[in-house]
Length: 302
Image 1 (spheres, rainbow, N blue to C red):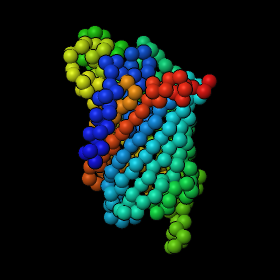
Image 2: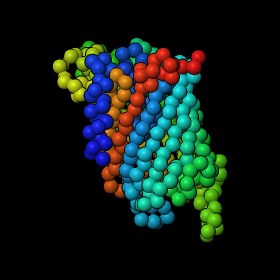
Image 3: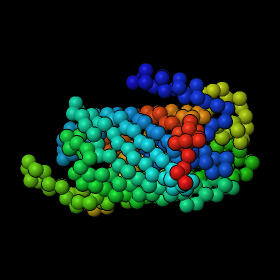
Image 4: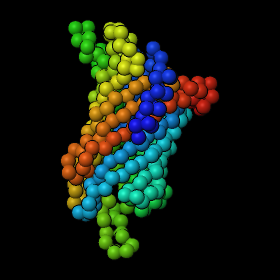
């Protein structure tokens, strides 16, 4: 684990530049690719993550550690519309297999440069029967329409200079499974598949924004490329036995942005007992294909 983190950080430092570029840009504001919820932008990018988290057991079963290695490829169709595909290899207590694959589309419908606002909408399709039941992959599909937002505080008055690097991003979605109930083939017991509100937000402080657009404090690399961040990731079922009971995690961490990639690391702290136990982690290596291959696969199709 630590060797992996050291290699990723070293690569990020090598790719770092005095001016960092990323995909979700509105005016002077860059919204980085976050780990637990999606950012409001679209881009040509490749995202890889590893994770480890102790999930709460279902039906009174003991909690178990789950590790995952995931990948996602995002492709812009136009400047404001993009699609993506992703999947994850999971290990639950020694049992391994693919989780369900997913595809999604996103459209950026509003930007405001002066006030550093970006708004987008999207639809995610978690594809049933594409993963292994032994690791908990569902036999049904789930569709999640969602809204995404980003708001930077660079429009604050000069008297509040040190607050200008702050930014908020967030998402609000509604997950609808294609089956109301699942039946265990061994016992015949039925389990309800609830609809749920999937929501979350991030609070981030951009040191690159501070250095480049507020005041150059002479912060050395790689810290001058760092964005301390806290992600809040929640899910609230709207029907069934767990209706209204919110679960999720609070994820403090840090993102190091480079010219062609970023590296990030977050802790995962369970919101309550039903969310999990113990503190897990997320680690990310994210590649900006639009900066690496600006004249080929990094360009929109149209």
